[in-house]
Amino acid sequence: MGSPHQEELKKYEMPNAFECQKKMGYRQMRLPLQVTSMGDAFKLNGYRTGYHGKWHFGNADGRGLPHDHGFEISIGATNLGAVQSHFYPYTNPNAYKQNPPPPMPERSDGTYMADQLTDEAIGTIKTFKNDPFLVVLAHYAVHVPIEAPEDLVGPYTKKRKLLNATDQFTHDHGAVYRTSQDHAGYGGMMTAVDNSLGRVMQALKDMGLDKNTTVVFTSDNGGLASSIKEKNMPDIPTTNHPYRHGKTWLYEGGIRVPLIVHAPDRKPVEGGESAFLTTGTDMYPTLLDLAGLPLQPNDHVDGISFAEAVTTNMDGAVRGGPLFWHFAVAPDQKLGRGQPACSAVLEGRWKLLDFYTEGKGGKRELYDIRNDPYEKNNVSKENPEITRRMFIKIKEWRRTWADEKFYEKEMKKGDDGICVAPEGMRI
Image (cartoon, rainbow, N blue to C red; front, side, top):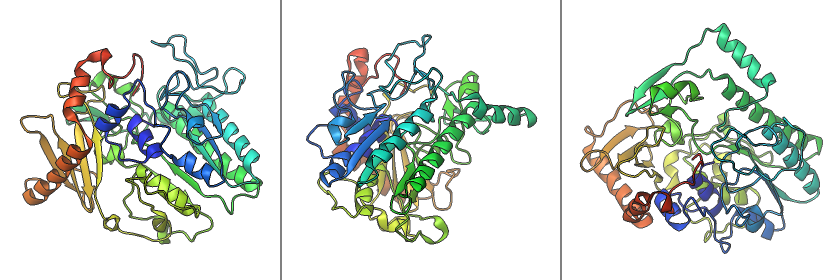
């Protein structure tokens, strides 16, 4: 998971990138120890706690990792957001910068990371099975480098050849983005994650825990689908089509993700799907609620429990307030995926994107997400009052959460600024 999303999951305040980077910077992304994070809350309520995989916070020296935030078992967690190889020993001698591999128990060469993390998580569940527990399995997949075992990639390679598939892409908003879902390596990685979930569910059943264990499956953002250069498209692994764009963009392809909640002690919502609007900040209070534990409103400041939506088809408007997103890029920059700086607000059926560095005074796009989820028709000109009202909400949110001048100043410092990613780090 990327840094703002990791922040929202663990600290449970709104993931405004400016404020997140102002407080911590990419160099020292740490949660203050005085924050009662999700691991702390469950541990304080008598739960055994284990974390496995991607953490993407803390320091290279080991400070600020899961052990410091309520998890008694921590396996494979580092301050880095990606591995250099998904095969043991999880290093790549040809990498531009040699980052240390995640701390994992020794395995034979060629062991696949997703398989080992699944083994470790199931082992932790076995250790905890006689007690209430919270176990987090945060895969480094699906993420670059795009690698998977050949027995998983092979079927997709054959299918691509059989279909005579070629990379399909289109141009949009100054970037190129993929519209064909036919990357064999990506298919292999997705299968590995799917297999992992199946193994965890089977393990719970084998241990007699499947009737009283809540399982949540989700992701941080849409798949990597765009590039600023057309020649890079063979390396762009996926598409979120028919949703627009993907990772780092605030169109639906970048922020709409799967969220599956299996709560065997509750009657599932009719039809299996709820229209309730939710975001990562809601996960902390929701899991406490589903576990029957007291909420911690002073800690999950911006999150609300969506436990009721697990059993009831609730309309998104009942949330009672808007959702915000922000992706910060310096005014004169675009990252390799082509996206400019942007803020977005979603309230009920309406979504406004504010590309605030484009042109004089920024560029705004308004979409009726309920009737146009693929964001094909910008209706800002037809709805000037709605556009104005929602733009005011974005400006007020940025004013209270962000320090734009601070961020721009730090970005201009280059490698000396706290908001710049370390050399060789993939964001």
